[in-house]
Image (cartoon, rainbow, N blue to C red):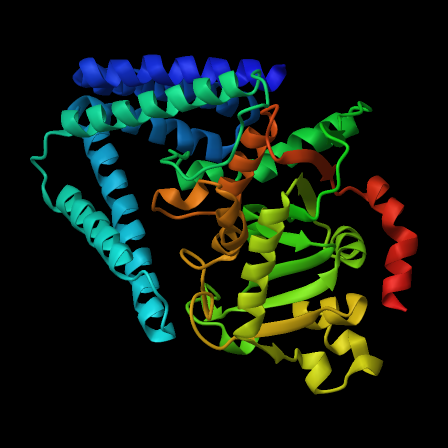
Length: 433
């Protein structure tokens, strides 16, 4: 019920806010300017008070900077408009360049469907360049565009809320235009969610970590991972079919390029019963696990996709395998493929050609690897172009799970903390032996 009310409230807020942006865009800029000035003045006075109380120079410095920013905003009243235009222009340019890189990789790897990617990359790049290089651009038009986006997104939230209370008789996944939250918001959604659960646990409360809507076998499971620090908070996503995990990523350290954002696409297989305990005990990951019901025809489609993947793959051996270093595990502990293989027996594979031959963090990444499977079921996450993150899929899975007739029939949360991780102790010891 709480999720339903939140979705309804957010939908109405987005529609109202979007309508204001569409019909009175200039007032929005004025409101942003006024709120920013008020916030900076309050912050200035608060920091000045703290300096008088504790005599910390850093408080005085930031108090003066806050006041200087207020003076700057009073002098340059169009600064909020400039910020919005430039930030959106940079975002479009990043999306365009990411797609251009992916387009080039698709050509090199002999993949199909390259023309549509080039068209979208060109549109994003041209729009980003236009926004950055046209100082006299009417920013009201940009604000009206944002308003329309907010309205459509709000309507979608209301529609999802309506679906969550409807009968399951006519429910089905199908490809359609789906508007997603911006990537910079989606990227940390799993981390925020697991943080909320851990806060409940720390307070001695018991959140629902397991919830099943339908007592049915689920051969397909999707797992969203969240690590404790740094880029691990962005997350990772993988799937398991018939209790065998398939996880794709940039695992070969010798192929790392562009600060590990590019490399040889590699996936591994490992039994699910070993994978989750290892992730909890050793990697300190939290995991959201979703069980997905499949019809007989859908099973055949999933098995067909997996077979196609395996047919263009070859075995890749991690460092501890190549060097037969099993008796000196500490020397390989820093290498993730080596420690995963040592503890679970995971086997790694690389692609000979086609999609996923090259890993690209802003293109063919773990999220698009998942779409290879869920796409045949009709999920619509990647039906609109853009940068897709594990958080994007997390938001989709959570939304679909709330719907009564959704194929997602159960959700299990494995939140990492020292106390709960003890549940995996015995399994962890078995893995390491």
